[in-house]
Image (tube, rainbow, N blue to C red; front, side, top):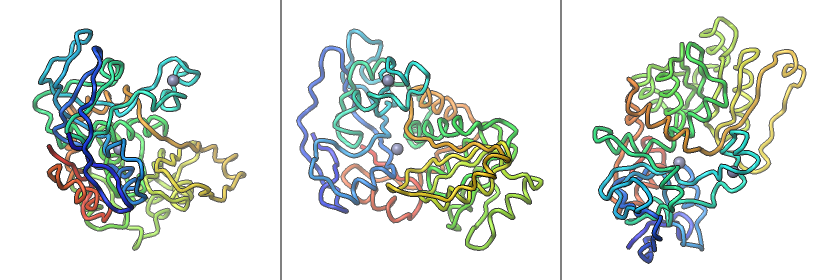
Length: 339
Ligand SMILES: [Zn+2]
Ligand SMILES: [Zn+2]
């Protein structure tokens, strides 16, 4: 069976993987769709010598092998967490599962962009979620990235009725804005640099779009928040400067979240006197837990917001390379591969 993997830098190759050997307790999945994530793009740009792993971790599909010990049935449509916290380590016991010391030890293989995917038994039990028929693949593939966003909002002390500033107009910025809207933000401000992306968020997610190539962000945020600053700032742009901008836009006592991964050694100046007197919180978020994926699916099914607008292109599996290039070149927003 075939899987799409990173080959030489900038190249997606198709690898012939052996059919996954599923033990008694394990499940097999035939993906129907898999989202393309920024981490896939990074992997392809960097290239990989080791092709044991296929690309993709935002996967939705149908179960092709069930296990006696679990209630899953063949043909059932599910979304799967890419990896599983152990539940027993120092962090898991303190409800900080995304910091689990064994986070990647139980995961899907070879990856989501493959014709057949192995779900280890434990992941079947704790990280696999049934999908209602009326939830389209375009929405269901967002369970994992939206789960990351919901974890990010939780880490940012987001609350209904509060103001949310999202820095970045890419797929994660869009999902954060849409989630803020769905969870009852009083106001969502999106800072971006791309006209069509800001337009999309204004149209579908009712955000106040701020084009930072034309407008001074801090002035606009103060104007929108009675000169306080935003309650909650989520930085979805991979830059220290963007985090520094976020800090200048947060209200006293609010929270700034460095949500996007940044290159090693990225540093910012920090005015410690302001930190002390303004008493704002500075945090980061990375990863996702099954709990947040479950919350994401509930939101995807029940919210009044159409999150699937973030998926702006669909490619057949044999064009997985084009799907990655579509995201890398920022043509639209998120791409999805279908099988
Ligand atoms: Zn992802
Ligand atoms: Zn753990």
